[in-house]
Image (cartoon, rainbow, N blue to C red; front, side, top):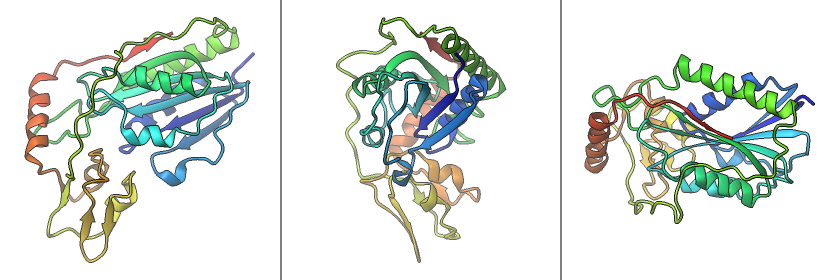
Length: 264
């Protein structure tokens, strides 16, 4: 039995997680591919139901060792129906801590059959030219590994290699790592901002409004930095002292290259 239908479900503000999932999908080479991008609320489908012939891959970024809280809301209506699912998290070369376990628990709670998990590395959201953090990742080596992972998934699916009733075991601890207390902070737009609206269009939580000025609701901001990444003119900046201090620490201590980890 080949994998006839593959469904990707991803939350990916800076498109990094989505790149990894699409590379895995290329390796699977299913006859039919559906992508549910839930980065924006209007991308959440009315019906998450899956059929028994599907293979589902769910991917999300890691923020401080956990899943972003908004991911829990976007995946709240998942219905697994015992369909095999692969869980993927993407982190910025520091650590993914409890995020993969958290995603696995969400999938199992929704009724999926968890068959594989993976942690890939992507460029950190806080990365800048002054404080580079896993710049350019996933690179071609990561993408090749993602494709190979997909091919192996397809092989296991076709040979009924997911028939075991044993549960997927991935790293992580319970209770999960405590999330940092939220604060009303966000990146800012400089006075010479051209008001093109790109930052508003990519914001996953609707925190940005562009009119005569750029207004950002710090309570809605999740510090994904998609607005900074999309601002090619450099008018959108992260100038929060605490974040700048953390970024410098990460740039100093997380230089050694980490590689993707796969679990079955």
